[in-house]
Image 1 (cartoon, rainbow, N blue to C red):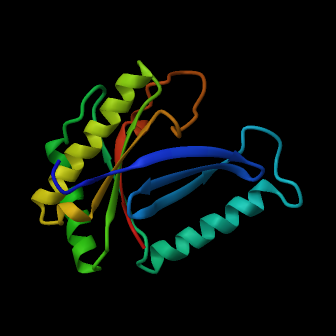
Image 2: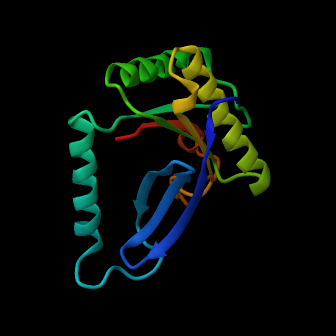
Length: 175
């Protein structure tokens, strides 16, 4: 899509948890965290580290500096559901009203299927939502697209790897 910046996405295991970073040629767009895959952090509990970070993010959210919109998608599809287009328009209108400098649009997949195909599907989902944001009046040049296929899903082990809540696109306001 013309005017939309593509994004790189990677993750790193650290002593306090798994950190993922999204970057574009303009700089870091988003840093997220999750519990570590190994033993907990030295010198403090994992819960206290994550609680502090979560409280900071909640402060940003309620202070109007951060807002997320999740848009669900159907299994194997990159199409935006007609009844979810209002969420995208709401995100675009809120971002414009708050004079948000950029939006990061991250496509996600569940844990089923081929990893390469899931990468393409996650990116296609993000691009579809970005197109709706542009249609709703948000500037294409201020949208960054990322794909997060199966990497940070709900980690619900057991019953099924096809979690509906993993199949989504997340719109994140920059600070």
